[in-house]
Image 1 (cartoon, rainbow, N blue to C red):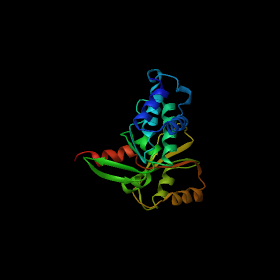
Image 2: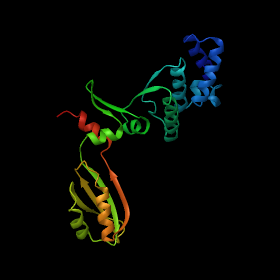
Image 3: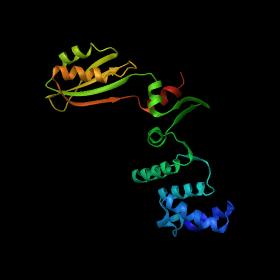
Image 4: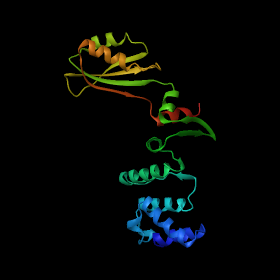
Length: 224
């Protein structure tokens, strides 16, 4: 079947009247970016376009809630970005439940994430709130110029909440790369910056990393 014939068939199953059917097919062709392939048979389509046809099928009767299972599985990077954009566009007006084990995909697409283990929700909230509630260590990476590691460590150790201060291998001998491990819930980045500023070290890089969702998922779902 061509994409148009298939969507027309789905509309008949959903019992849309002729006037509403044509306008709905046109609307979904625009929403799911199918206008250029409506004349093609589904067998000719790439997997990305097939996923879009599936979305159009699911949206035909304008449901309030849409459940999608691994919608980007097997797609190339360009297709993944395109499907994400379509999902976000649909999500402005509808509730979308996305089922996936690719947590980076959930993080990029979803406003709220629930991690389920053996039928029970073990984490629920925004990406940031889940990472914060995990209560684990965070890491800050800084790169300095015109700085001595011993002096830097001595100054940073005056800040509460720092667990470890490590010197990392650097590609440039003139630069000092440092990894700072933090266990405190408080945001101590201002304290670190103030010390760097007062010591007149040249700050080239400053970034903080929290645990990834993949790591949190493993901690919450692995059996003891």
